[in-house]
Image (cartoon, rainbow, N blue to C red; front, side, top):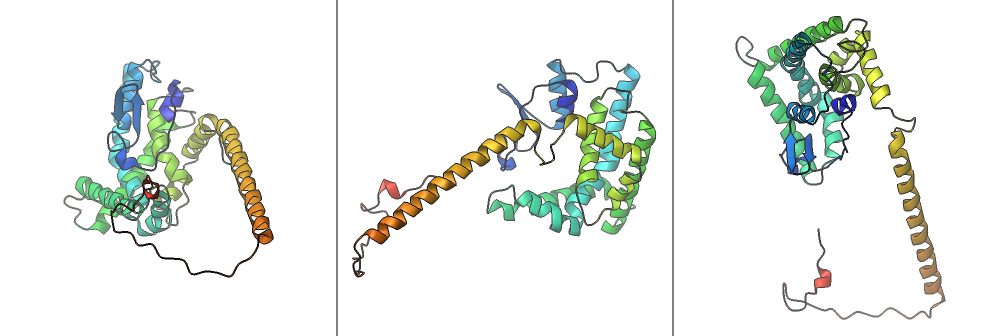
Length: 286
């Protein structure tokens, strides 16, 4: 999303609750006519081919630096990010699990967060769990050391500049923002990595600038473009509730005015399962 905003690509963002049914089985997914692309790097390459290129002013050396820093992020910072969200027990139970479960339909909401947590742990152990790190405690300590070292390198590289290659955001800025913003903004009970990030004011300023310039929200938490839609939906909901309330009042008045009869025992109608007595009206679509 950040790269699309930097390059001016006209994207329509659709949030979904059933990511496991996405066209490629994972999110994010970019759908352009008959083309379906998943994975951020492939999506960025597709946008560049469509002439939405945030790196057109970069030199060959700066392009090589971009690739090197992206590799550094994925090797050094990503494991700690996964651990913070999905493996750290207190963060997972109080933030990540209820957050994701609230966006997944029941009963998969009981299963999918745990599956994602196990996948994150397996990925960490697969990439960082080799000798001489044999225990999970040793792996955790190492990945957080590496992540803090990575943050320090990013802070030194950014310096006092607004973005990593001057005054214009590029692919590297999009990747760094995508890694840092969740750490910076999510309120976790265990904030080891977050505390270290907050000690690097230029990286915090970097996140704040992108959020305010490209992901600006109003005080109510809605984007200006989405505020009208939210207000319209609220108005429709209010009108619907008022209509239902008036209808209930009329039904109540009619019931009070109608003659009252003593209750009668209703005749029980028994239907065989799947028999001719079943009506199509009794079948509800999903």
